[in-house]
Image 1 (spheres, rainbow, N blue to C red):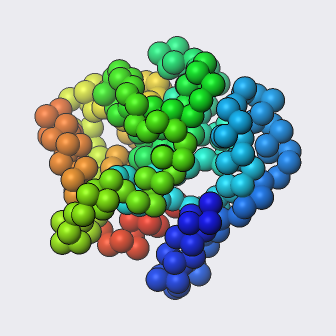
Image 2: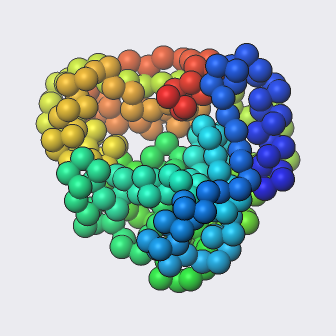
Length: 248
């Protein structure tokens, strides 16, 4: 937690004007009612409860080589973080293809990071969203390892040179139905883990941002959009614009 606090402080010091406009804080004492709410809703591992009591993010997301922009939920927003995964907040219905024991504790641009509550430990599982099927695999063997990855990405630990670290950011946005409206709607449905009605509502409010992040991640989404004939635009954005999109 101390290292995470130091990282947030350093980030604010490096970009004072931006964070004066978009405040970011990491508080280390959660409200008792928030902790009580999550512990009464789920049977959580003791290590994870300890973390939730001491991690209260306010507009804090983590950008690193391992991640595009990962948001780790605190006790206050843990329940809301399940939306789009285990339940649909629009229809207030359970999503049946989601593993019932998986609790989303963080999300990186839609890719969930979860603990399996049936295990009683903090092994972290992840899967890529938008593929139509949740194919989970172990990402980290415990919570500490996962949190450490946010601060010390594996690539950096492998002595990757600074020149190879990506610094260009992009956004992709759908601007119209394209050649095949049904395929575009299906893409939106998978990308946002929503139902057809919500996907249609999203499409009616174009431009719809479907990706924001580093260059390595944009190519795959761009290829999918080209394959279905969707109308879309790709724009290079600054780091400040990227952070603003993440926190909006």
